[in-house]
Image 1: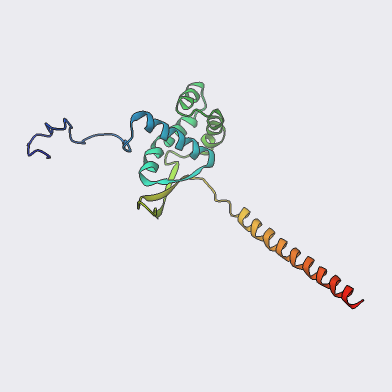
Image 2: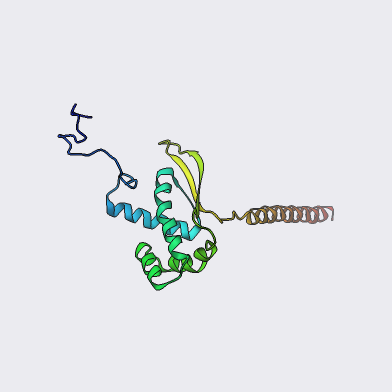
Length: 172
């Protein structure tokens, strides 16, 4: 109650109470919010894992889960609805050929939110939004470390050989 009135409406602001408002507007106008959802859902389907704030993740998750539910049944109607929400045709194709069939047996809950902590600067709670069947690629990390160690060993051998050659030249 901002003005001391007992009714639910403030005469100064002409605002009603926030009962039964169905979604988080993220303090954005509708066009900006739709673009944000479209871009973040496209990134989620492209990389299958994105890092964002908790509020955005929870809002985008709803849109993503609806599209995945549509993608479980590959029909022209569902493809057109997905295309109207996502402007990247490659991502729409991936959604219907790859992601949708992978989630066929799952009745819902296609995404997961993993908390990371607070962001420095503004203390926003950061999370990772990912598809449930996402597998972190750890083989690449091990391969990179092995390659780096092998490269270092080769470099060390080359320097030792060069040192031996220079020692031989000095002796002659």
